[in-house]
Image 1 (cartoon, rainbow, N blue to C red):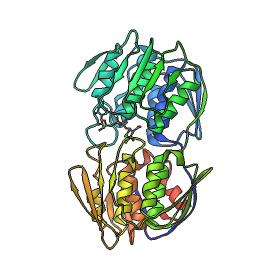
Image 2 (image 1 turned 60 degrees about the horizontal axis):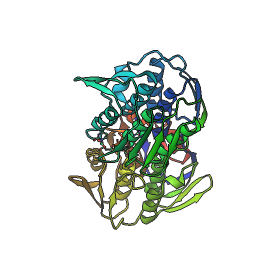
Image 3 (image 1 turned 45 degrees about the horizontal axis):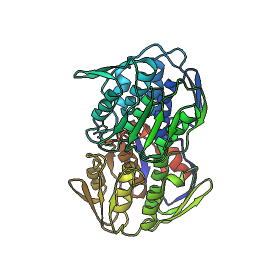
Image 4 (image 1 turned 90 degrees about the vertical axis):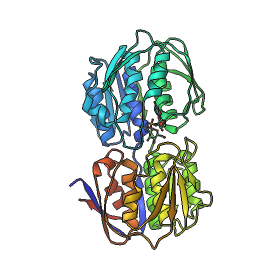
Length: 416
Ligand code: UD1
């Protein structure tokens, strides 16, 4: 069955290693298209979103080999610039291939991308910004054809911050003619990681880590070997598992420097955090009220991807609290499921109000998207009795083996 069974109530203790970052490996894999030759990507997570990306690269003519978490992508025989609809349809980050393919092949046709069902997730801004760089785009009901004889650098003043648009423009700009400025650029760590990968391959990028990226186009990039850092959202998932159940866990490789807003929130809720050289030590249950609520924002603000996990921690804290979602408009899909487990949460517009209850109980609940699914697993760890979380495939999009990692931390959990 496509589900996870959890016997709740164990206090977590132990150590687990945090996998490589999903949201960093996807654009880095897309970026290999810009490099003629073989790139080696280390610490690439074993998750279905990465498999889809590798399949897309193969369908374009790349030779892909994989030895555990080392992926080699040889792009010297690129042949196709039409992407298979079934993979594009399931993964939003397939849009990332657009900028890279235009730079390498000059044309591409694809269907509109998919991804988690967390709001409208349009691609209007991607297309508008690429048009300004000389791309001709013809849209139809299912998708679009894009062509660029010569990509040219321009100054982009974007109407809002977008991770995907920033990544796509970086990929279109590194081999374009002249200078591209992206402002305001997203500052998420995954953007910095993409820029560092491209820089190591010879790209001219300055302003990394700021909201103004300046890219001087170069003639060509050279193959590199690159290590993908650990996933801050996966680390945040196991952090909240400890916040909800109590205990003491060490998250090996967790990127403390990229988790400041999350760690500050966990500390305000009463959990003890110690950042060490090689990971984060987490101890104690979250049992305090978050006085000023929790508002999601672009980096360095609180990440929308951990919002539903902190909602669970809030529901178990014994206090009232509220969460405001400012990035995606449909990210409270977990609320009815949590209420079936005994939570008391009401949603008004972009705010969810969490009221204290006597704790959660086991239930059969349905994952409706990736992070919400992981949050239901975490809720079940702290609930009384047995739970089943269905639609495990959503969780597999982003977690290598959530049951194994949680078992290492002492949870009673298995595939069902
Ligand atoms: C990326 C992450 C996702 C994370 C999100 C915000 C990956 C693979 N995914 O998603 O996990 O939750 O950043 O940190 O890295 N928008 C438009 N038009 C566009 C593009 C975006 O209106 O053309 C809107 C979106 O609907 C959303 C907002 O902009 O409301 C921000 O989205 P964006 O930052 O682009 O998120 P993604 O890149 O899709």
